[in-house]
Length: 177
Length: 158
Ligand code: SF4
Image (cartoon, rainbow over all chains, first blue to last red; front, side):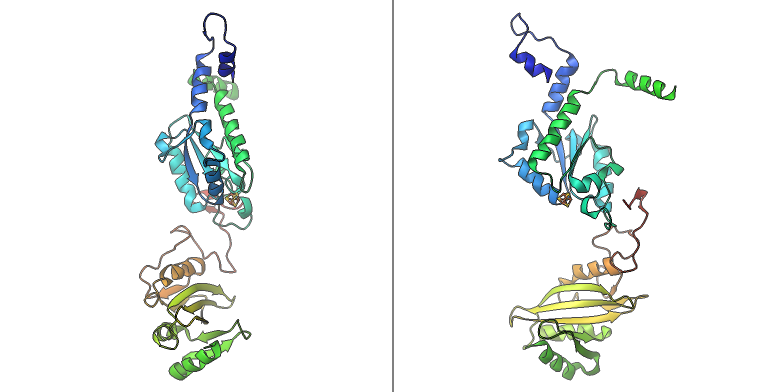
């Protein structure tokens, strides 16, 4: 990302950096994501491994939050049953914008091993909430999980945050035209 | 005591309510019991000195297509022996006396059998679903179960 590179090679004039405020804000946002971990099945065990000292998930600047109201993104790791699906929607709706969803493992992506005969399993969490990053695997290794995290940071970094309403209006106009 | 000997003792005590021993010797034997008497038989098995079946290892529902059933796996931690009991009940209005008062662990097992097969356990203090949603329709482990199209507006099939 731009800002850090510029710190290594700042413009002349005593460490003054020229950049966009948007970049600065996005840099801050992407490097301090707080997450709500919604562990539902075996994938949650793999996530615990990713969180422990060997792999150290927190080096991404993430901090686990017990409440959706304090979280920037939610990690849905595991089998989403029909019973849990309604709780997932509820938790997602309680999160404050901007919010992101990381779907971890085949189960959360598409129903996984239960795709055909699982009468009780939601076939993909994207049927109820919008997913930003899908991490494949059953379960994904921590390395795969981190790739997903890097993808999420990239997505946050590339987002425009100013004039959102104006931009959306323009997009709407283009679509309706 | 093996299953055959337990069967003899039960036969002497309960007469015609103990039906037969089925399965293959030596390990797969089970004793079929008349459904209405299962709680009495279980109490006898738990409290009689030579039996001492103080632990219900497993209680499971069954679907035999023409009827439903319940299987009880008992274990004695004192005599280190096991026995399997089986009862049958009809499909339309399945009901089996509860053994919850004999082994507390039967509480959740019976709720599971109810949840998956729709077998009512008469006398159970809390006969509600345990795994699926409380308003789920149908009995998932019955052989004629069809996966629902939607649940609360969420599509179920892939
Ligand atoms: S994707 Fe595999 S490991 Fe993950 S919750 Fe599903 S079955 Fe378990």
